[in-house]
Amino acid sequence: MKGVIQNNGTVFRVHQTLRYPGEIILHQGRIESGDMETGQRFTLQVDEARRRDTARNHTATHLLHAVLRDELGDHVKQAGSMVSPDRLRFDFTHFAAVPAEVLDRIETRVNEKIRENLSVSTTVMPMAEALETGAMALFEERYGDTVRVVSVPDFSMELCGGTHTAMTGDIGLFIAVSESSAAAGVRRLEALTGRAALESIQSQRQTLRRLSVALKSPQDELPERMDKVQAHQKDLERELEILKQQLSKGRSAEILDQVEEVAGVKLLAAKVPIENPKDLRELGDRLKDKLQSGVIVLAAENKGKALLLAIVTPDLQERFHAGNMIKSLSAEVGGGGGGRPDMAQAGGSKPEFIDRALNKAKELIK
Image (cartoon, rainbow, N blue to C red):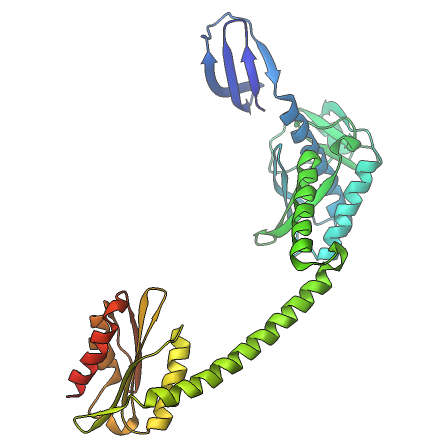
């Protein structure tokens, strides 16, 4: 728990409070002003807002535990938890992910108990008596002879030493934000209450408003609108792919005009306006089919990088190796690489030297 320990001349800001066996309580923090000496009297003041938020999350954790056991089965046991002013995290034993519809039902039932505004009582009693009443205990925890039992009438009863609300209605609102795997056979549920839950709803509502404006659709029709947008995008992508193929076919004819004969070998060394290695390979395959016999070296520039492709037709592979060629050519553009005898690709960081690489292709053929 955080807060301030102070008197007229000293302020000690508490960052963390720890409890040790033998009822020893340790406050960790920093002296902001003054000095602390043995024998001085101080006033301890808890950060009330943080304490109330923590209490909301703690009592909600007890409600959640009871609902989980009721919905999923008695095999559910607490396997760890974290309660802070901002949120709660509850780990529990369970063999599978909790379906969304079951998670919604769990959230609804916790909120029903909140709206019933049930009293939350704390009772100190001997450990043996507490267990006889049916109070749940964590068997990995160490308890003293006397324990504190926190109860919500006819719903939840657990051994607990933490801070809680006086009524379940003080929690305000409970929102389950995620459910995931924490370990083998252990699930983790995170949730928000009170102020944090309200802030989360307001944030989501602002997001919906922005989407509604951007998509020009009422909020309750956003799912249908998104389906239409995604379908339209897929149609456009298909049309774009068809256009790219048609453009590439036309471009192939233009590029073939650059074929020249070097040392009795047809060489096509050209720079092309291609955006990615995949499209470069597809263009190279089309050109190879049309050229039938020869060596093809294509170069492209994309996002400040050089792309290179070398292709050797089957009849020339005893004389020329595409992988060896691309290794030599990529060195001209600040790259490196290799590949198969028939086809190889590489990249480089110096696209300004692409022309040098294309001229090097002629030297290699010679």
